[in-house]
Image (cartoon, helix red, strand yellow):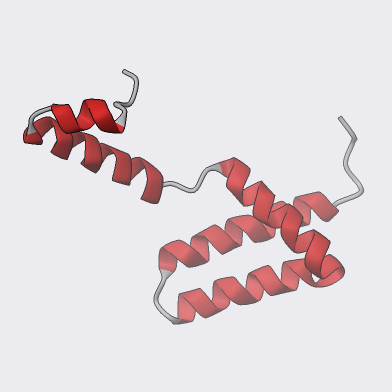
Length: 93
């Protein structure tokens, strides 16, 4: 099913509008896509070079200390992506 445009959504009854809004917020805020993890990892390597992994790991620790387990998990995923980007021992594709 294709998402509704704003004009189409506004012409629908409130109950449908409510369901569309809830579905959209869950998909946007509930999941960080893998491509976004890799984008951040690449940016971290470009900005911090050899310190990228340590900086990402430090940020994960900070978030964990603050009680943000989801944020810490995202930064742990970024740390793993940075490790993989910097690993020169693997085969090239």
